[in-house]
Length: 132
Image (cartoon, rainbow, N blue to C red; front, side, top):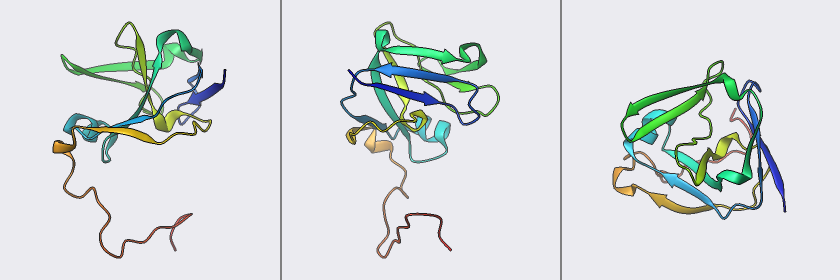
């Protein structure tokens, strides 16, 4: 069984997960786009018993934006944190994982809400590092 760690940007919160993950879910709904400031949220779903806070569990703040949509963030750096809203699973924002997971996107949901700019234009350039 593999163990992977994750953390927020400032390092105040850290966690680990046991076991392999089967892929990343990419949500393109307008709520996730607003919460991330990007094209949506990339989520890894893990069983609750496989998720463990290591540090800073008390350093979280949760915002209930709608009855069906909450987001938890680090109260220092604002990193979106794992959501522990259901009794079975924890929903990790994939970008908070520090260790590689070895899998890609397995599903994209709410594609009908996808931002109209979420595609590569013809001639789009890609850089391994910051462009100059």
